Length: 170
Image (tube, rainbow, N blue to C red; front, side, top):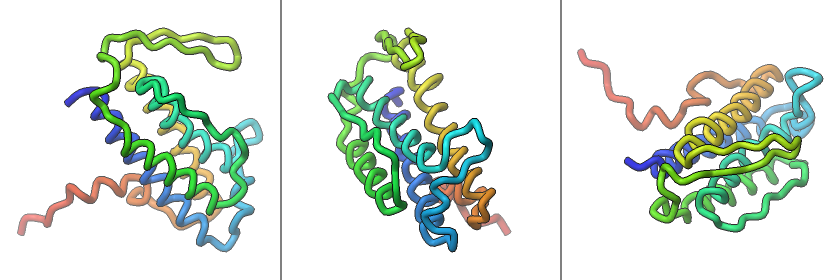
């Protein structure tokens, strides 16, 4: 399996989990007020954690697939909007051809807004940057919702694993 195929499958799991978490949050009694919740004063609010999770996937698709994507930097103001952005990202993911990605050893270079720059190979970018970044913001989303009383458990975070479940041996 290529690094591109593995990364695309992982991004699909991330977006699927995010959509599931947002759906459960949308049904919670606190409603849209949850979007302003945060784990700590120096951390981003839920609406930003959701946007950053989506953005990490789209930025990776753009950097590796040279798609010319434009990110929506506006705050997410409702769970319905969040779900629409997730759906759009899933569509972009589904339309991405891993065969068009650069070789695993091709250089990926990028700069952050704070001026810090990075240079790594394409497979390292996926393994060491984009996938961990996506999971960081997904985990923050889960933690905020859990802290706010949304009924979540481990199965909500790794729901994609149930496709591999089998009946216990008697």
